[in-house]
Structures are given as structure tokens and as C-alpha cells.
Image (cartoon, rainbow, N blue to C red; front, side, top):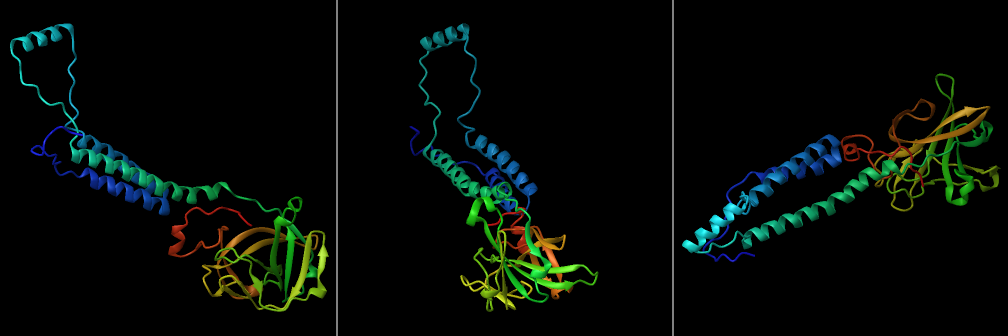
Length: 308
């Protein structure tokens, strides 16, 4: 605190450094959402203007400190003995400067507290990918053309039931190119990841079990999430409720007459039906994440494969 009286208040002059610092912080936070390039530019601006601001604030208490030698010390002592000059007060922070420095420190701390969770939210998913193994769902004869079958399986048999997954599989027949076509929907709602159920009766008497796979025929032309009311049609397109995109799908392959599940991918929208459908494919993303349109810019980092 200062020993100066109220007659010598600190009234800092106008400065553009705080404005530049604020612009840098704004660019940094905006860049974390839109682009790392903008974030880097914002960080540089914040650092540069922050240093200039700190130098401006502490200008009066900084100064050149002359080197003291024996000669200068002796001369100073002699001069002091001859003429006793009035003692000048030592430079010190005034109350307003103390509050200003405290405010800067608190603002920096609050900025760190708000920024670090955002960085963690955006960066950590890219380091937590979980690759799914391919799954053999058995012969193609297990999937009647034009009908959905509920396939439940263990993606990691060594982990037990914790790795159980569910997919809705429909045999679409052959495409225009003469290749087998399947619609394979993942059973997790793209709102918050709750389990989606088929809107139709399940034939439990016709269940087939193949190693770690169970197949149940179901008469379903739509699907619904019982948790929050999300609804999807037979192609997985959202028809009602809070989901932000279509149901995720599995890639697949045919090997030795058997259907093999591959990796998941996100779907923006499906035009057409069955083998003639046009699918807007995107890298897989967590539930609640937009993959197309302007909203997708709010989610620049997309983990390649995380299921649960």
C-alpha cells in the first residue's frame, strides 16, 4: 500500500493495451471453437498486449537503478553531510494500482478456470478413441430381404457383457450395381446416447444364436428413444424429438457368404430408401454433435471411433 496521501491519487492515462488484450482473449476463445489458427493468433495478441499493459501499469515504479561504486558512495556521503536534503518518499503502489493489479490477476485466474475445461472438452476426445473389432453376424440367409433383424453381439468377448452392442440390420436385396445392400443402424440415440428401440413386435420364438451373436426378427418401420422422445423412420432419419442428426450406421462387408460389421460412421441425412438410398456420410461423432450445416463448426474435433 502507498504512504501517499489523497492529494496524489493515481490516475493512469488512456491506453489501448487493455482493448488489445481483450480482443486477444476473445479471439482465443473463439478460435477454440472454430479454428486453431484463430486461437493461436488470439493467444499471441493476448500475450503481447498483456505484456505491454503490464509494462504501462508499472511504468512509474520502474526506472534505471544507477550502479553504486565506492567513489559514488563516498561522494554521496559527503554531499549528504554538507547538505541534508529533505527525504523523498520511496516509490510505492497506490491503492488504485494495487486494486488494478489484483483485478488483472483475478481475471487471469478466472480466464484459466474457464478456458482449461473447454480445451479438455475439445482436445481429450481425440486421444480416447476405442477401435471396434469386426463382427461376424453369420450367413446372409439369416437376414430376410426387406425385414429388420435385431443383432446383439459382444464387440469384445474377452470383456464380457460390458461390451454388448445392438444393431438393427435390414437386407435391402441387391443395389443397381448388383451388389448386396444392407441398412445397419446403431441402436444408440444421437441425442444423448440412450438405447433406441424398434417400434414393432419382436419375434422372440425365432431367435438365432451364433457364437456371441443373437438375431431376433422384428416388424419395425420406425424406431424410438423412450428416454427423451426421439423418433426415427425406417432409414434412420430423425422425424421428431431432440436428436440432431440421423441414426449412426455401420459399414459392412460380405466375406464367404457372411455379413461382417465394420466401423461406425455418422449420418447427416438419408435420401431415398433401401438399396437406392443416398447417405450423407461423416466421421463418427459423439451423440449430440452436429455433423453438417453451420452447427458442425462448433464441433471441429471429431473422435474417429468411440462407442459405449
